[in-house]
Image (cartoon, rainbow, N blue to C red; front, top):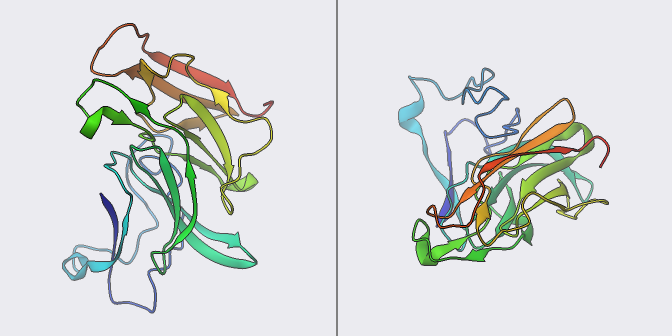
Length: 206
């Protein structure tokens, strides 16, 4: 499956001025960017493909975007996207080229909700711009804190969200409030044994 970028002919590149830092844009998951000023009812018909990027596998994740990330001394707008073979990519919004790539693990299951029964990075990351990091759960059942610029794993991470990733998976996007990261776990096709739930991780003291 490919990630595609759409744009309007309004400038030299599809530069972003505002982050889309989590699933649904905000903690309330409204899906509305109140700062959007270019895409309007009168301009939406002019949207066209600017580039596409092959993710190597199916994806169910909503991408997140960070504007003005420092990469090798230059500011870049980066979109972060995961796929079900466990891959997570940072992609340059202007060019559609890969800036960095990590594999965070996947699980081979008998659940046919995903092609081949393979589950990887399903839930959207959460961007912590103040500390230039993101939080994301891999197919190995662990939550990672990654550097936005390089994809490097930060000290003290990853942390287990589930001790049974063969039966439990994180599908939803991470949410963070007051220094606590929340991730959910659920089954693959209701195949036992599993325990659905919400896991809270204190990122302030991790």
